[in-house]
Image (cartoon, rainbow, N blue to C red; front, side):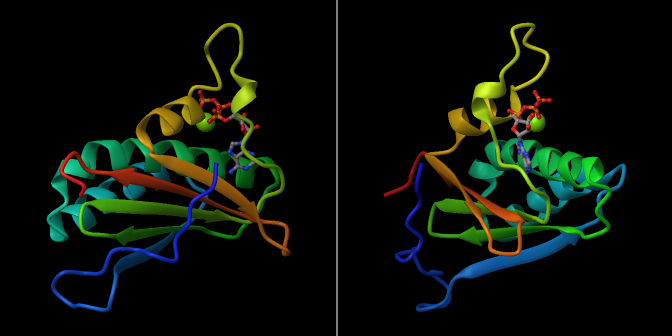
Length: 149
Ligand SMILES: Nc1ncnc2c1ncn2[C@@H]1O[C@H](COP(=O)(O)OP(=O)(O)OP(=O)(O)O)[C@@H](O)[C@H]1O
Ligand SMILES: [Mg+2]
């Protein structure tokens, strides 16, 4: 899937500017819980509670995958979570430094693994993955509120 981000809706409070928040999380126990809490706090501040449940689920799955990938490679680098708000949309951006890419087809026959990207696919209007020249990757997921115009 592909997301076009060149026409993000502007911040209604500040025409011409976008609301954004960026935070880094180390690949350690508790990082995903912190990222979930961070997402809830930021969306509440932006008056986007209607998207909070879906956003925290998507953040949870993408951050878990990124942190697991860092742990597999024993990388010290943090994982960066960026939230970008439109009028009634949220773009979730998770940037990690690990090799490999999301493989939705990995869903196991037992159903014990491969659920994360299925959840992301179900909740996001669109999502995509861009591999960066430095070997890491950036995954983006766009969520739309029910009242999105
Ligand atoms: N950020 C990432 N870096 C590298 N590989 C990834 C990344 N995200 C996902 N993958 C790959 O895609 C596969 C599928 O991810 P998905 O989240 O759907 O399932 P899972 O993590 O294996 O299991 P579950 O999320 O159900 O616990 C992963 O097993 C992994 O191989
Ligand atoms: Mg997963």
